[in-house]
Image 1: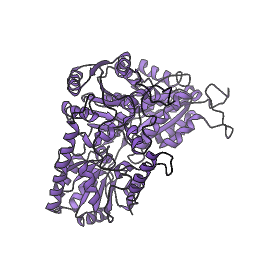
Image 2: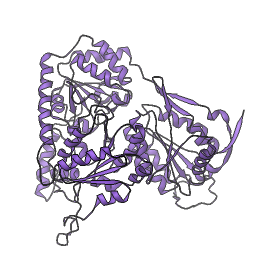
Image 3: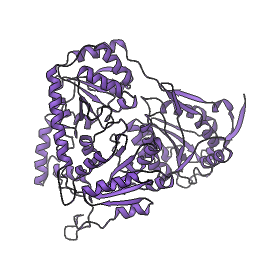
Amino acid sequence: METIRLTTAQALVRFLVHQYSERDGQEQRLIPGMWGIFGHGNVAGVGQALLQAAVTQEADLPYYLARNEQGMVHASVAYAKMRDRLATFACTASTGPGSTNMITGAALATTNRLPVLLLPSDMFATRAADPVLQQLEDTRGGDVTVNDAFRAVSKYFDRVSRPEQLIPAALAAMRVLTDPVETGAVTLALPQDVQAEAHDWPVSFFRRRVWHVGRPVPEPAAVERAAALLRSARKPLIVAGGGAVYSGAETTLRAFAEATGIPVADTHAGKGAVPWDHPYAVGGIGSTGSYAANALAQDADVVLGIGTRYSDFTTASHTVFGNPDVTFVNLNVARLDAVKHSAEPLVADARLGIQALAGALDGWEVEPSYRARSRELIARTREIEEGCFTVGHGPLPAQTEILGALNDVLDDRAVVINAAGSMPGDLQQLWRARDPKAYHVEYAYSCMGYEVAAGVGAKMADPSREVVVLVGDGSYLMMAQEIVTMVSEGLKVIVVLVQNHGFASIGALSQSLGSQRFGTKYRYRNGDSGRLDGDVLPVDLAANASSLGADVLHAASVEEFRAAMEKAKAATRTTVVHVETDLYGPNPPGHGWWDVPVGEVSALESTRSAYETYAAHKQNQRHYL
């Protein structure tokens, strides 16, 4: 057997460049590059291997420098999302805090079921110098390190304690990364001494491998059972989730809706699968859903879920589907999701599943009166949206007015990124996506700090698109460092920085739950009250963005914001558009509920009143059995 002598890190780099994914005959690099920050745990291992690969050109694995380890994972996840989970990056970090900084990113990836390869450095496998710098000493076992914290948030975890262990570990990692059901964060912990240790590797380990991402075919009997339920429906509703987008089922779904007349609601991950102005698109569903979608959900007798995991925001904490006899048909590649809500499961690829259902339902459609009802609700929803866009709030504009202006100035292919705060709720009701990649809201983990880093990954995934990062001051202060990465990589990204001097979403929630917006504003500590309710802090986030290398534009009104956005679109560099909005809204009207428990007893009248409201909503909550 022919072998080649390489260090473990050199072998890993050489292996990664020969991994490809394939679906529908289209091949692409599975791991097109590696993000990293070097420290004593990886600088002489993976760092040396990447340098050697670049100098000798023995392996084409470009290295990208991040400014925060969590940020590099977010960038990789955003890239994977834009590439329909068919490509992602590897991320290397040093021992100790460098590695554990990636854990939040790992949790985000796995929760969103998006692939990313994490390579945290680990302690000495030989234990020759225990305890080394940054080593956790666990009295329960000598083999425990901080990297064991990755186990809970990884879909696959392995520690490569000997060079030859890399072979099965690396192959297992690729298997999980390319599995639509099992994908998420994949973690290979690499002891720093093992990274630099030499081994005679089989040359065949480095051969070109193509990991075929299949389309599971629906079982004919399951199709018939699902079709029978849909035929019995008088008020059916489709809930389109991320699976409809990742499978490329958009065209098939639109045709299915047109043929059957079933209206299509969407989750955050599914928005854009059906264009906002399609005759059967009724908008987002659930806690922050649209008027039309939630009204239809209240009466729906059969719900067809396509590629959705039914989070509590989608179901409005199990209150949005109000028909006591509602039944579910769940089309999903993962059986975990297909059987939720005691559904009739259809375990299959979304596109093939819709095609099969279309064939089984050929000639069937909803009654004309139900089509008319959908049109009426959509028309009312459009009136609500326009009212939010043109509220004429002042002196500071409402956030909804800024979103309305963005809808106007961006084209259909522009990618809007957000993750946390009040904006996801506003966006689910108000964003008018016509392209399945235009709406990039991470709401499975809703991680503050995702946005700016995700802008890097999204732009790298498709440089032809305008990428617009929508970020509030709360998320910006969590993690804005990757603006430096945008600048260093020459990426043109627009960052819309909406500053309201506090947490608008949690502040409003706090008030509704009787907690009086406590601790949700950026204020000086008040010497009289002892609380953080003094004057507004003199924080200049625009100056901060400028110091990181971005060009900055200011807007003090909706009109100035429109003009600034036109300048930003014409720019060739990363540009931050800074605009202040009113912390107190107004936000879009609510059409759903979210279960956030309120104190059952309290000395505060505000809390007691909120609990009465909460208890009333709880009466409508139920298991879908």
